[in-house]
Length: 349
Image 1 (cartoon, rainbow, N blue to C red):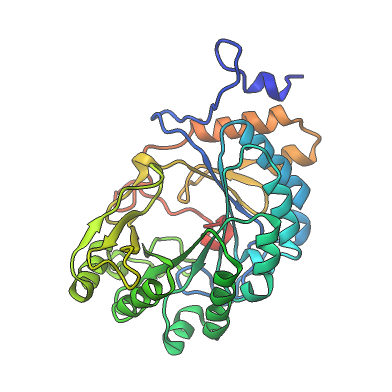
Image 2: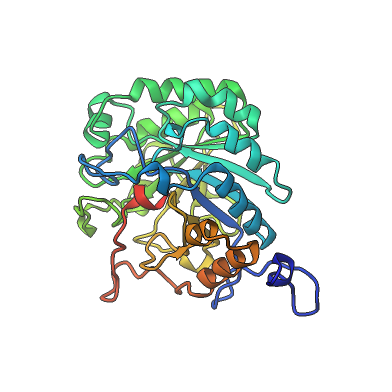
């Protein structure tokens, strides 16, 4: 049986990252969904009557740790925990601690809606979590509730305040832009993030909503959002990217921001300006499927290998096959585009 070391051996006998697809893209970022469950029902993600996988079908913390260790051996350097809402998974800080101990992980972060953050921020930070991405689309209760289809804005704001005091290296705010709904939320969100020192990113609405209400006319583009910001704050200046594979294009406020450091605002524009050419991300769903793109229509079943007694080399080969099959682009807007069967909450953001 082939060992893991043999499966990852370079052409001259030395080990080297092998997660390179047919278009030369090196993959160093793994998004790991820990659950498909969520305590919100955001219109751009979940249906009101969502059904979830039974616990037995979700990967255990031990299985997740094993897969991540193998992926790190293949060159993964950044791991982000997602959902659903990852904080509804009991004792998540235990998984964070085990992942933070893996040599080779340079960045361990989490995406959350923030509802449960106040109670868990301290445990997560002590366990080794370095960054947070918090989803927040509005600072007005009525708009928050129209999107999330439940109350919770005050809990999110409390969670952000606690997280800021806890001292995370970075806190980002992710806001989905919906035409006809988000236009009046843009400036207040920017003012809030400038004041609090959060890195704000606007994300275009993608065709991954469970209710399949997406259409291109509902996409408020990053360019339109930028114009709204510039009408209030003046010109935005391009910022040098800190990560060549990052999906966002970041800008600084030319006025220097409230504290004089300029502040950052970013735009993730998968519909109007796809960034597929620099994509370095892979995904592991909560039920143990590898995906090479949010819009992939194919999955590679790691859970089956894990639970049939497969060795690490088999998992490594599966991930290499997943990467090798990655397409050049997702194809949104083209006649060939095909929506994946699963929605965002079932895939992991």
